[in-house]
Image (tube, rainbow, N blue to C red; front, side, top):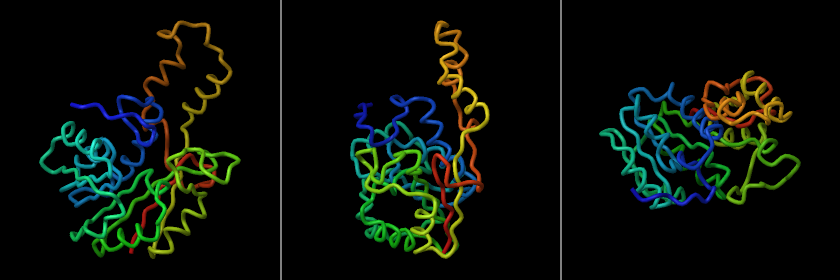
Length: 238
């Protein structure tokens, strides 16, 4: 299996920290409650780990990404009867004619210049009772104190109200939730900053051991104080 270049544009499981992997997996675990027995489109699927997770419950999952290399990697790594991957730029979603019960776009919309075109196409691809689930970073966390993204691959980052208004311009019902650090992660983060265990060897340092095993359980989604979240996730209906 040919390795995928780590450009920093997308999450690669064998390149990224457990902390960042867990944070990104949270969106897929959230979406898992919506996909049972459904037909799912995963936009910007990257190396495919999230599409494969959704395939655990979905009837069928199609993951798309513009990069042929990551799609080739996904096709080789995640082989399931109800899972397919295809090379496709979001600019070409208009070529897709089939409908989906669930469309997912995780940490992708901040990369898109023509969001109106994207949302129009997603609306068209959704079945009448379909659900669009979209996540993005919070500009306050991703680019604190800046009006423009720190990440060179991001075109536009959003605050909570701006994100809700963007999706609300196309969908009749939009519910927004925010991702927060759990209590144990907040505690370990404070201890890490203080450096209290820096003198210990790595194999017995409790903070380093914790960060090597961070899971989605160390984060949680909430509808409270969304503006100060790490990421946002939206559930959109026609």
